[in-house]
Length: 137
Image (cartoon, rainbow, N blue to C red; front, side, top):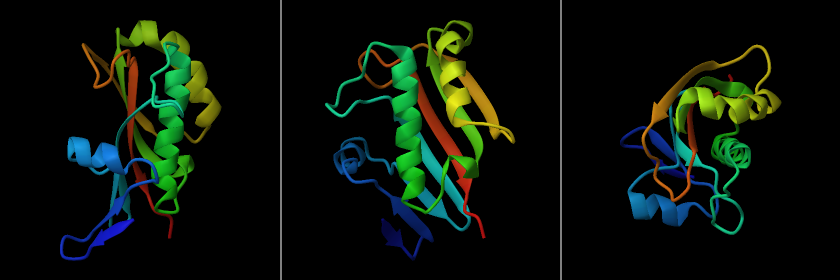
């Protein structure tokens, strides 16, 4: 974590994501006040590759969101807004995404906005996941 007290931000950069932030000019996560904003996360495996399987990508992307939240002491239960970006259309990707999502998110659910997109920022990427969470008092 790096704090920018002048701006009122705490940058959330899990170990191993430093290079991605520098390369693309982004913070994996940012805390301001009681809110945490998580940049879109791709499903990248431990070898730095994006698996062909969409469900595995979704699982890895959710785990990446979880790692960013952990930097601020938060969990997936603290998410108030989940954003998912689906290459290939929502109907087709929801066949494999919804079962994965249901393993990580249970009632009471966060709000959720899904977008069908033409392309994502990684070769073979089928899903990208971002979030807004709150820090519990």
